[in-house]
Amino acid sequence: MLRGRELHPLPSAYEADEQLLLFPAIQAFISTRILVVQPIFVKEYFNSVLLLNMNLKELQRKAFEEAENIEKKEHLESFRIKYLGRKGELTNILRSLKDLPVDERKSVGVDANKLKIELEQIVAFKEKEIGSLGEESVIDITRPGKKVNLGHLHPLTKIEEEIRNIFTSLNFSVVEGPELETEYFNFDALNIPASHPARDMWDTFWLKEGGKAKERRLMRTHTSPVQIRFMETHKPPFQIIVPGRVFRYEATDASHEINFYQLEGLMVGQNISLANFKFIVETFFKKLFGKNIEFRFRPSYFPFTEPSVEVDIKFPTKGRGDWLEVLGAGMVHPRVFESAHLNPRDIQGFAFGVGIDRLAMIKYKIPDIRLFYSGDLRFINQF
Ligand code: FA5
Image 1 (cartoon, rainbow, N blue to C red):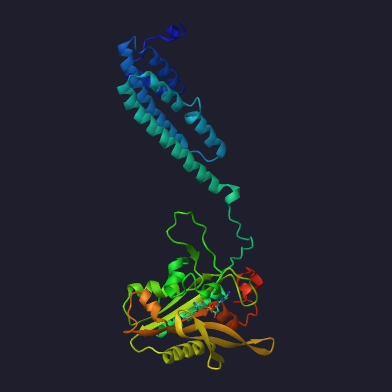
Image 2: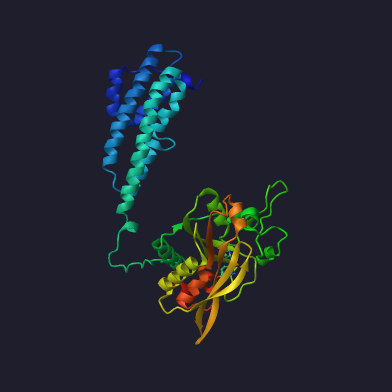
């Protein structure tokens, strides 16, 4: 047997230590061979465990000392190969562990693996250290700087913030609701039953749902469903605004988008009247556009308000004044209160829904609503 030739008396622990100091390179070689003979020579076996432990200690001392002096990439690579490479000194010891009985394998193995992690950490640390001294990471202070482009708020976000501030200064609270709505909140609870012709007023993005769905869902066509959601859980009196995104499946033009922003208003109490609405809306317009803003009220129809009105603002386009519809409103319909489990005999109130995009068009003199969603920086950077 080839292994038979490798059997030889082992040096004592002391001698071995001496040898280690003198001939460290030979040590791993000896230790791996020793393990082969352990089933035969018990004494040699104990010596082999001792030797392995001493080997590890010496290897650690030596490696740490060498690591101190590593300054170049090439040195680091030789260091890595010497200890951790396929035939490296520590790798040899680790490989030889399998020949030890389980108990000893455990004790020596823990130390050997600990040392392996330590050496790997040293290599990683040195790699970084050398890299940060390398050419590629030297900071050239003469290089021209890179301009950092600062972003800013979108005009629609800006105006929404301004509107929120105006209404909170008038003691309104800000409430939000879901963009994905149920048919009930968007239509039925607002007195727009399936058969009602008013349902045709909004072309809707419906969700495709499997047959198991309890209720049809849609992308809300207006912010009015939040009226119901809020009134179901709050007792009057209250005054709220509800800013949010809405969706309509309709043709776009200069004043119509398929997704745009609305702001719902709702004020409910014992004696709230259309006169209160007129005061609030007038104050709001004057704060947003200045005292000289021109607007008008027109009678209108919504199934969820009675009576209903619409409001237009004079919009200066190309030198001539045009009226632009910005808002629908009215006194909350008794059926809407009933949907929210409130008694219409005890309370009354007004509601309105204003188009935020249209207000922004007027404030910033934007002739086409589609510019807000174009993503064109030449447009956006003007704000
Ligand atoms: C409604 O959406 C009602 N929910 C408003 C309402 C609330 C009435 C509470 C009564 C009580 P209308 O469809 O008219 O109403 O839309 C209201 C405003 O949203 C319009 O005046 C307009 O400013 C804006 N708007 C409507 N459709 C579009 C669109 N396609 N693109 C941009 N803005 C739109």
